[in-house]
Image (cartoon, rainbow, N blue to C red; front, side, top):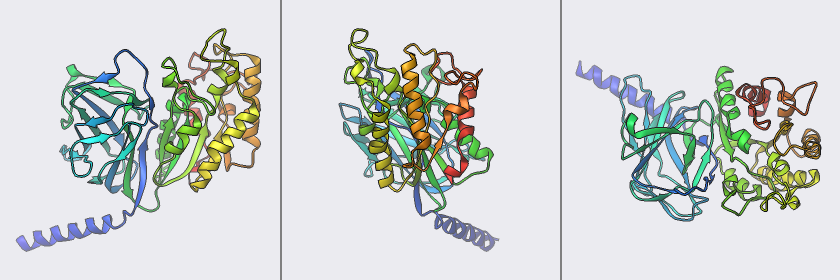
Length: 402
């Protein structure tokens, strides 16, 4: 009997090794951008646990974690960090340390990004892993990104609960801010790859999550969706005042950093609406001069020079996403819509990219193309409704992801 058990154990061990031998490629399986968090009176936290649930899209044998303090002005120390599978069939919960150079404490220098040691852990497609970070000392919370969507949830808790399965209800709260955790890579099969969605607040909201869910429904299992989106950002310019610093870095600064995506095959860029709607003149707002308003040709040149050229140098395919209607937005004017349409026409016709996703046509009113279609306006006349975000995900040609 004992010999039989030994044979079964040996056979299982060999199966695991054979499976592990198929995992030879690092691919990003989850990711956000890192930007400047809101400038508030309280910018420091202490004795706090951050928790990020992540649904795995691939099988794999190892993970590595990218932590970013790109926009911080002080070094950050994560006292300890764990990853755990919370969806095991047997109900077990076994948090595993995420370490840096063999140490539990992870230090992220100001203005930099770091990568953890490789973590050996069974990664199962469809499983939910929680990544938990504990900060014992005062920590500058300046490097983070606001995102939302059905797959983008986070929590924080007062106290040290990083290795606990459940955060105490009376000490925890949900949040849409993701701090420091930038990207997760998995050691997986060669067939798998990553598709990057790059943009501003529209991409920081739900459509990339709905695209992930669409892939699940279509049984497309070899591609991950990596979101690189920062609210308020522009292609050509950025703000250097604390009033608007949370609107992030300009494309020239952002893009090279955010395209550091293991296993990426392509990028879809939907960006530029803030270049159009922000400038109002110094007589209205000293930080938003008319000189910031670009011409369509300047936006196109920025798109090609800052985005297409760099992405192509990385071997990525590049797809453009047209800009959405803005009729009724608080700074709307016909000349802005004319600029938007000229830029969209450039995206539709340029030969410098590999294709276009016409988000504009997907969500606009066919009889009044300057407006969202019925039910597709969130109410502010700039951001889509949840139904429109689903429509945007449906508008993506799945051949672009193959």
